[in-house]
Length: 392
Ligand code: LMR
Image 1 (cartoon, protein in one colour):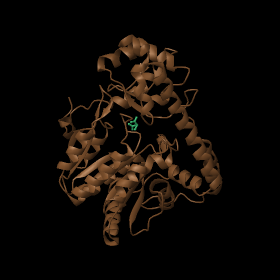
Image 2: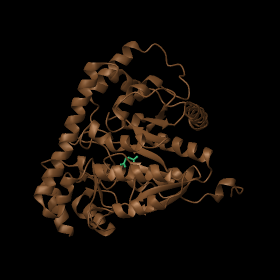
Image 3: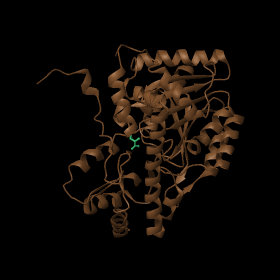
């Protein structure tokens, strides 16, 4: 018998429900199985290929990279600069915007949460529910207080905009409001341009701090359209944070390629935020992994590679939208999918129905009823509709 240990006090944690689906799906021997679980793009053959532009950038990097010496806690700063016109529509002055590379969008969110907590321990962050299951754990891990309002009604497929506005109108100055920039995860239901304007107004009027999570830019309506709401909010407030991910739109998932941008009203405050971001990054991961961000930099430095990446992104977006339209046309109960954006939508299914779909039909999706529509093809849409009808 071993002596008692400090670690005996730990509570057993459940495996992450979403990431567990990866293994469950892999181990299912049924040929007709459908993976609508974790949010990765799949092509018409079901593969998640490395993009052409990324392969070309990798070849170039292999030839030209002369050192793997440390870069510092900010990572590849040129990468974060080159993304700015894509994200913000323009390049901001260094004394208006601090931008650093982070390990994925998750790293950007965690760094944002740490920055907020450093400024105000226990600060309140408003999350509209349902939201990405990792949002609340990240905020809580930084010691922030999570408050929620209802954003979307799964049964009626409606954005509960009045409830959102009521919550934001009642929030206190200095509260943080986390906003999905586009391609809402899990609902696929984005704000309309008018709704974004109203959100921007209330956020500005109440003195709230927007924290925009922009992880799917280009996978909804297009690079410009998908950033429009976020830009509106960011332009209407003095201070704001934006967590960015290139994992999806560059297909770099496991390379973990993100960025955190902090916009401030004065040069002095920008500098204050930058210095705190760098010291928090140092304490968290010292410096982010280089490879994926270096690839994005190589692509964005080169007009031909950038054009090819944009073309590949258009193919991805078009395919997802074709699947959406095919589902909407194939079953009137799925008509709402044709009006939504990005990889995800929430089907009005109970956990039990999701279980039956997995057990009897080899359809894998999150327990919440979230489906990754990129896991379907025009050929498998009828099979999926039949499976849904069987559990209804
Ligand atoms: C998802 O929601 O499927 C992705 O963002 C993957 C993840 O990290 O959860």
